[in-house]
Length: 465
Ligand SMILES: NC(=O)C1=CN([C@@H]2O[C@H](COP(=O)(O)OP(=O)(O)OC[C@H]3O[C@@H](n4cnc5c(N)ncnc54)[C@H](OP(=O)(O)O)[C@@H]3O)[C@@H](O)[C@H]2O)[C@@H](O)CC1
Ligand SMILES: Nc1ncnc2c1ncn2[C@@H]1O[C@H](COP(=O)(O)OP(=O)(O)O)[C@@H](O)[C@H]1O
Ligand SMILES: [K+]
Image (cartoon, rainbow, N blue to C red):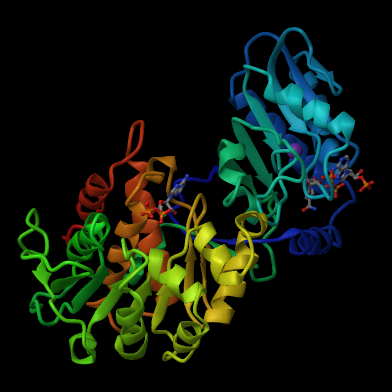
């Protein structure tokens, strides 16, 4: 059993169908109850490690094998001399609750009895340990099957890691995530990947002979009047990520300086095809509603590497001609960074549908746009045509603050410029992980986007001895 996050090494994720196939293959060589015995033992061990007080441990058991895991844990806890109560209502002296109501088999809105038990679990002030998944949370998507799911303080995921724990509502409901593979090594590829720190190894630093010309040029296009800050944040992030030279083309009224507070940034007065050639271009941050279509069409045609964010995404969603230009770009040359509403506009649907299956939505968008997609939010999804999607395991609600998305767009550009040959799927995963890692390093409260850049800059790996 291991505490999962922060995650050093990336791991495979298995959806419900694959998890069932892994279980069936394992059971072919084992006694029928072997896996459930292992699962119950793991639950009981973690329950004791959580050091429950002297009261009664409530084991809320559902009708299927999730409940079966709970019953075995209850038996083992009793054998350890603990008072245990099995049922759908808590004992008066509850010191720890084990949520074994529903796991992989959740397939509809919780019925009245289950919903009442979920509400009772959520009313407790003692720790709640969820078995496999918080009950009410869908394993494949991290969406809720009904109005409410258990908000656990700990979740022990069993046998196979399920994607739903790591995206949409998963992280908000799972608490501290633990994993026990029940001593079974899956003989199949994951349906998706969970990105760990090892993804940063894609980003080797510059060699000693590097110079600004070898580190690539970034051009940030956006920052209409009133929203200049968004483009400046992206440009500052590109600089902090390691681009050799960073230029800003600000839309609307001319300005004298690119960024008076960051002397390293240069102003790009024009945005003609020859100004785009050879550059990594990030477009859309603070782009506004007007003045963006022309530079966007030029960037789609001429930028060899392109990151499309914010208003540029909205402009593409509204224009079949721009959509066609996007699809006609060279393979492996475009990264789109939508939040769920922007993704919904591009897909012609609504935010709720995107959030109901983030992995599916991101993959559909990647195929439709022929681009790498970073679908942002808790558990960002990185999807590319023909690739397995990745979920970012880093990040926190400290990032839920204006400008952190602009920083991500600029950061991707700044990492891409010195590494023009890197595969965008790997680049976007590593950049998102880095961004999330910096976003976790906040004791409390939101992280201002300017401070986020400084934290991301501080995470550049020191040279090895
Ligand atoms: N497979 C593995 O990898 C391993 C699995 N293990 C464990 O088994 C768990 C999976 O067990 P499972 O398949 O029995 O499903 P489970 O989650 O107990 O639910 C099914 C029951 O709930 C019911 N039900 C469903 N939705 C409902 C709702 N909304 N409201 C009310 N009822 C609802 C459903 O009813 P039915 O649809 O049949 O009418 C059925 O009776 C897994 O999460 C893990 O803990 C480990 O022991 C070892 C490895
Ligand atoms: N709760 C959260 N958990 C993890 N990451 C988050 C969370 N909230 C926001 N983020 C991240 O912060 C960034 C916000 O981007 P975006 O919504 O475009 O903001 P803005 O447009 O203000 O820059 C994204 O990278 C997103 O993944
Ligand atoms: K459960």
